[in-house]
Length: 102
Image (tube, rainbow, N blue to C red; front, top):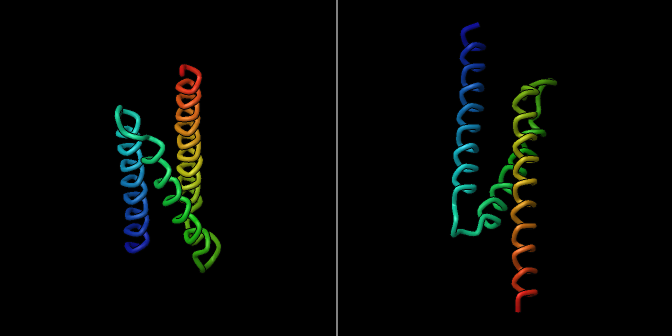
């Protein structure tokens, strides 16, 4: 019983720490003015996606990875993909505007 509670506490703590890290990283990316946001968000998207693949393949009884942890990772990947696509579109629009102004 105590090990179960400790395991649940560690899982919740890890998820909270992960969300705090993602939130801080998103905030820093959005507030950066002179850096390339596409280059900053792209590798993070790939990293999160590549960590979700082994997470989904953990052997064991069904439910060995809690559904909410998997959902959290999935939501993170989707948000990161949309963020990366937004920054890509922003770069394309800027390039087109520069070409038209010449």
